Image 1 (spheres, helix red, strand yellow):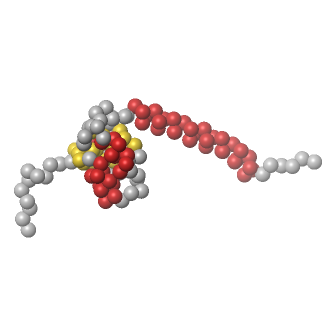
Image 2 (cartoon, helix red, strand yellow):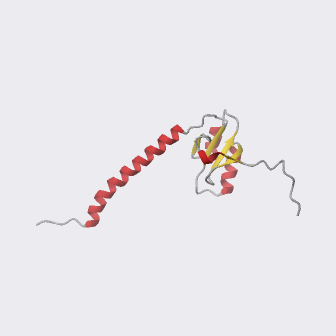
Image 3 (cartoon, one colour):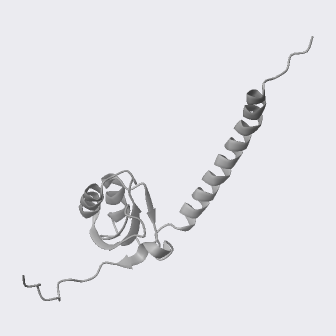
Length: 123
């Protein structure tokens, strides 16, 4: 007597290992990119904060780690400047998940406009 394996079990038997292999490849690529994108100048970093944080949380955390020098291509990436001796440590303590070199981060390195030289707008 032969028993047939349901189609859903056959699909799960194939899809499970394929999903694990794909996840492994993606994690390997992410790790390689992260290692290659380490900040070259310890006094200026692109800090990647949790995407689920609100903009206020991100700006507050970034401001506690160093001076905000720019905004990233995504709302959770902030360019920070600060004391090279402890900027990376302070950014991680503030909640940064990843620190990148702003030059290698591409769109992450847009500068924040200097509004101090502009005249105030009258009502």
